[in-house]
Image (cartoon, rainbow, N blue to C red):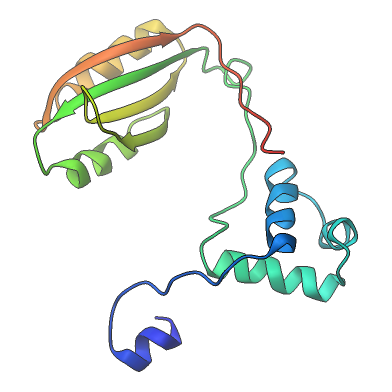
Length: 162
């Protein structure tokens, strides 16, 4: 528990500290290359290594940076089929449904949205047969899911955060 929370006795998350231009530059660098060294980051934003290290640690502690990952070519990794699946769900069941969707193999992104459906789910599967099984067996068996619609992805491009 953060010191501010312990002092007030409240269990509310502490808001992140404001970010300056150097913090934003560090985020851009790490989004482009999560393996960039502290030295490289420091040089590129014109601060000392100690300052860059402290800033990155603060960004992690404040949950601005929530992890370091690799960008994967899903097709080359054996996940050649992709789809966006829209779901209509029982009112007030978002948290329950989200937890079940997070456990699905190939689930890449889950969003609660407004409009004609409630949830937008991006999945990657080895092939269309596995996608069919995922939708018809796993997703549609979730009691709070009222209906689904599957949109096949023919081609996708991850945008460079820079």
